[in-house]
Length: 572
Image (cartoon, rainbow, N blue to C red):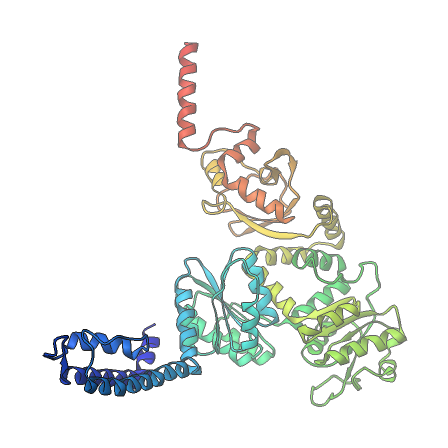
């Protein structure tokens, strides 16, 4: 605010000076020019009456001649002062309008207002740098769970999009370059309430700069960055960036999992992204030749993993020399039937259209289906505005980098135990995974699946924590009991128990809980609401344990104790 006022007064210095001089001369003239009272006696106007008269005359409100009618000399002077004050005011008002249209002044006002809004935050928040497809999704996801965010983006169009978003929590935002240290400082990077920085811009160098500034400000703060090339990935890792996310490497791993262990991928998608496109059926043959169009970031990620696991593949690339494509690559875009046939499409099980052009990718899929209708189709969507077209194409798998990154970040921030769960899941068999999917579907009845972590602590589950402190046995079965009907389980499944540094997959209902245990659940969103309510409400938890509700609160407890004391006296 100090800088805004300083700039305001500096720009208005000349018009204010002009007004002061004009008013001073006008007042001085009225005090020097002699007048007459009602009796014709000489009368001299004092400074107070002169100031009063010029004040309402100069503002063009209208005036009367005070305190006595003016002489011709005074009226002549008033004519002069009328034009002088009006001109000075027009000049000043024009300067003010010009100032309010000045880009630098407006930028400073917005930065000041933004800094004020960030300073008023009284709960933990994340700084999200970049409000594109990825940033907008993660802001909406965090916002829906009551987690505050602060948004920075250099694009006016994206900031306008944020202004039109219907979010339950207010989101401070600023249209500016997040790679500038002063912008990050305005966003609260030095605040103790800032618990993480998400570098999600489309520029690797900008993300690198943001990550460096964040780690220098606070080495212990979580920094998550997206990356587009291996060089930036190595650079980010060199100074301790916590999580570096390459969407195409993630997708390549997921596709490999789908080919080799489809039930694990189904479970992964069920928990992480229930609204995503349905992936291929686990009974569908996915082992065989894959035709991959484009040897860019996606193609390179697929080539590395497929080669390691000996999956047959053929690449189609328009510039195999420039992209350093492997030997045997067919030259072309893949939009022509002869190119696809040359790549062996008739013998392939699937095609991946992974070029950086959405029109080419759709054309590749359409042409490939004409040659082999039962082909597994995978396409990369580069522009979010083309989503309706890709949806109409009815692909088996749609590669959306923004969705992949936002889902990965959401797991890291919201339910970090999910990563541990998937690591342990990788060691289990497909039959074990299939049985778990059936169990979840029975509990949840094919509704959308949510995942959450409940920690046995004073802050997250006070009633459970206090009960354990008193030596009362609390089991996982108590947590998944419906507080409305204790004999009915909630639509939730315990997936993982973390105790100290040990992990237990699928803990049973009889598992006794201890302080600081962390339990990962999946289930309907309503189940999480009831579970958190019961774990924090002493009376509800007592009802779940023994079927009896007892008065809660000091007044009801005091009245109950008095009643019991009277009953004991009567018995005696």
